[in-house]
Length: 394
Image 1 (cartoon, helix red, strand yellow):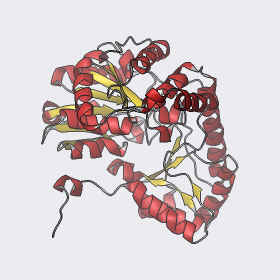
Image 2 (cartoon, helix red, strand yellow):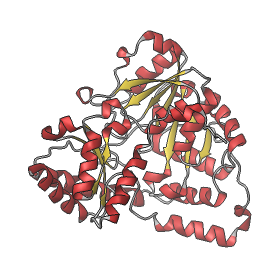
Image 3 (tube, rainbow, N blue to C red):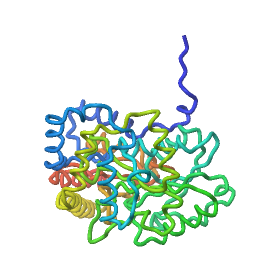
């Protein structure tokens, strides 16, 4: 008996984190002292008041053990609406402009399936978070890769997108603060330009704002939805994974145009039951628990950023200091450029035990770079830099 998976699975690239995890497992087997700076998986614990809320809810409110509402409980959606208003001065109707998600990764993939017909075009940033590409392919759509280049501060040049692509496009993805490049927008001008394009060519703008609260040096990330006209053409995704170190809890939300939220809610009601109620109530505690814990999490990443950049600089590897995210986007040292990012990352883990993510895993324009995630104990960054220095000088 021959069992064949759907052909669209064959169109997906190898999931880069699976490859890295395989190499990491091999390193552990060789008893290497592994320093894992690969996946953006927060190592800091979820703040205690959020954990306490979960424990209390589970113990004392058994009704929360039942099936949740697919769109999210009213209290969660109201709290998100209040938080978005307080944080970004954005007014949202919790009844039809917000829904909860089992993490924003799931939400992005489900949005693609909700709107893309076979052959529809989606414009995605390159390099970019892999689910943009993968979600489009799984929905049967076609991808146009929009370059993000260092010479343009990793911002897209919309003028370089062919008009024939714009006429066929149904979705455009944006992501600032950016993963993997850590680039930011200094004002709303990029979003204003995107909205003009969206209205002219009838394109849905999807802004991924998962790193809005992980910012440094006085920088405050804006919301796409702050921009005049944004609610007519787009939505914005938010995640609790990075902001509150709740990656394993699997909760996020999407907000914006009810014309976009509605079909996504309908799709989700057919394929999942939504986020468990006790997790939603914990997320409410996260959003209403004050800003101190978020600031504390950000200070840890800032301290690690400063230390690692300084130590790598001593090794001769100059890396620009980002204003946001939990990543360093590092151009390969000149002597390793011809090697390519995948082989460099393989060499790095095999010879030093340091796990990084090759830039090629985020798209063709990510080649020549690696991404380091600032997700291990502060003291380990000194060790990592020493090992890298030996490798570079060898």
